Image (spheres, rainbow over the protein chains, first blue to last red):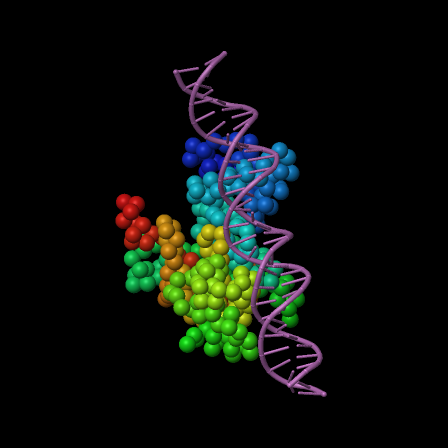
Length: 140
Length: 140
DNA sequence: GAGTCGCTTAGACCTACTCTAAAGTGAGAA
DNA sequence: TTCTCACTTTAGAGTAGGTCTAAGCGACTC
C-alpha cells in the first residue's frame, strides 16, 4: 500500500488507476526518477498510459506539495516523493548518483536577518556535491 | 575592466573579442542571466555573434571553474560569474527574483560522517526559498 | 437519459540546448 | 613575407525534455 496515495487522497484528489500507478512507481524506489523514467516504468505496468498523463500527474503532485521537484543536474527534472521529510541531497560529480542525506541543523537558521532582503523565507535545500567511492577509486 | 576576464586569462585561455563581450556581459549585471539573456545582450554589442559561441563559451567558463551554473528553477540554466565567493541563493516563489546571500556557517560541517555514504564532499550550495516583500504584499 | 465536468489520450508543438561541417583567424616556423 | 596548423567561430540542422490542444471517455448529477 502506497503511503503517497494516502497522502494524495487527503487532498480530495481523485485516485484514478493511472494516478495510482504513477504514485506507486515514484514511491517504490529509493532513487529519484526523471519524468521519462517514471513513464517507462509505469508503462510497463499499464501499457496504454500516455506521456501527457505522467507529466500532468507529476506536476499536480508537486502543486499539492506531496512531491518535490528537483532540477539539480542535467536537463531533466527529478521527482522526490518524500516531500514531508526534512532532507537534503548529495550528488556525485562523476556519475550523477544521488543520495538523500540528513543534516544536523536547519539551514534557515544560518541565514542572518540582514541577509534576507525583506523576504519571508520558508524553506532551504542543501545540495552537497563530491565524489562517490567508486568514482574516487576510478579517478586516482 | 572586467575582473572575470583577468581570471580567465590566468588559465591561458585565449581572450577573443567574442569571449570578452560574453564575459563582460555576464559580469556587468547583479542578476544571474540565462544563456539566452546573455546572447541577447551580447549581440547588442556584437551583432554577428552566434548562439553556438555563447553556449560554448559559457560551458568553457564553467569547466574552468570561473563561472557557476545554476539550475534552480524553470527550464533554463543561469550563470553566476562570482564562482570564487562563498555565497548561496535566495529565490522568490512568486516572481522568481533571485538574490545572492551569505550564510554564517559552512553547510559541509553540518553533514555528519555517517551521512556521507563514503563520498568525498567538496561543496555545498544552499537554496533558500520564500516570498519577496512585493509578492508578500500582493498575496495578502 | 441527458448534461456536465474532470481525466486521459495521441500527437503536434515549443524551448533550451548541442552538434556538425565549413570557414575564419592568428601565432610561430621557415 | 608566406605557410601552416591548431584553435575559434559560424549558420543552421538536430535532439531532448516538456507542454499544449482537441477529441474522446467515463463517472457523477439532475
